[in-house]
Image 1 (cartoon, rainbow, N blue to C red):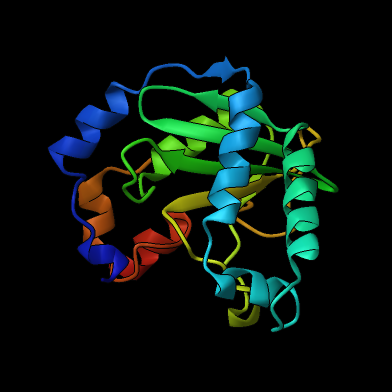
Image 2: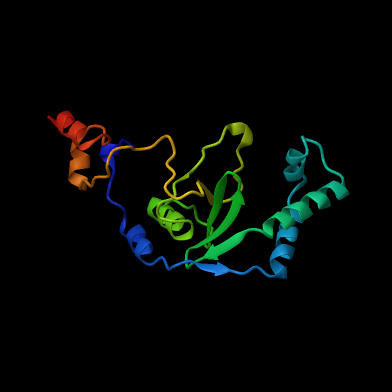
Length: 190
C-alpha cells in the first residue's frame, strides 16, 4: 500500500485507543517463577536444540539453562493495563520492553506502542523496533519488542530531524509519496 493510499483508522482501533487504562505495576510472586519453569519444560526438544548449537542438551544442561532464565526474570519489572502486559528488562545499553496483549492478538497499534513507551519509560526517551536478520529471528508468539535508550533526551542518529508538523488526511492523500517536509509536499503537488 502506498502512503498516499492510507485510509483513516477504523472505528474499532479508535475506540480501543481511547479505552486503554493506565499501567499498574505487577508484583511477581512465587507462582510466577514456577509458571515460567513449567512453560520452558513444556517446550519441544527443537526449542532447546537451537539454543545448544543444534544438539539436544542433557537434562542437567536443560535444567541449568531454565534456572538461569528464571533467575534473570527476578530483575524484570512487569506492568499491565486492560489491554497489555509489558515486561521491562534492563539490558545494557538499552531498556527492553516486551509487550503482549492479554487476548493474544498481534500488537499493531502504533499509538499504543508510543503510549506504552511514554508511560513506562518516559516522554523524551527514544525507542526502536528491530527487524532482525533471519539467522536470529525469534517469532514464537504475538509479542512486540521495543528497545529504549535509558537517557532522556538522547536521540538516535536516524529518524526525522525537522520540526514536527501536523497535516490533515486530505493533504497526505493529495501527494504522490506522502513523505517529506511541508515545503517538499507543496512543490511535489504543483
